[in-house]
Length: 227
Ligand SMILES: NC(=O)c1ccc[n+]([C@@H]2O[C@H](COP(=O)([O-])OP(=O)(O)OC[C@H]3O[C@@H](n4cnc5c(N)ncnc54)[C@H](OP(=O)(O)O)[C@@H]3O)[C@@H](O)[C@H]2O)c1
Image: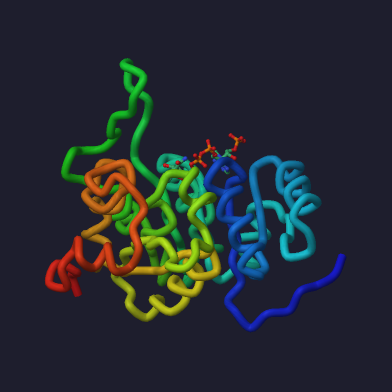
């Protein structure tokens, strides 16, 4: 297999479901190498076969060890488990959480599985391995828009993110740009609820659609972007 060299931090996507597949396909379009892992290695191998040499399939422990940035494209409860299971391997890494803490309700919709005023981002930030840095990112759109609105012309669509570690802004923003979107930090992890499902800045919340950077800033007003 051809090795693709890059100076960018190594990124791994864990979970080859809807979001994982969309993020990996976007990164390949953005010419970014990506390590892929799932609990079934066959899924990662299939994807690599389909998308080419930028995609490197690995088992989950190897992927976490190898990458600098780990995108957990899995459900909230599974992220909690993996943070615990791979606490040592995840030390010092950048962890990207796109999760929405929801489950199907009995009316064909979804309901939150944590408290109304809680966010997955804040809960995960309290469970972080030593020196790991968390960004809530890549989850503010539904999968159809994450795939369909990537690399939009002439003005890219926005993906919002939140982190307490402003030292990782550049890495997170590059990851979002390599996905074909314009990044916009809305503040610290305590703002996560705004960019999770039902939040005021989520496609499946009050925002209701994709927005360009101009529209996003108009919507937010510069003052409401928390430091
Ligand atoms: N779908 C959306 O529109 C959307 C939008 C924004 C954010 N999100 C968030 O993105 C995350 C992924 O959603 P999705 O729609 O991509 O889900 P999905 O299609 O169900 O995919 C989840 C993936 O996670 C894997 N997985 C589950 N438990 C795992 C574990 N313990 N270790 C490793 N892999 C595990 C699954 O593998 P198996 O096949 O083996 O179970 C599957 O490949 C969720 O947190 C969701 O809230 C989704």
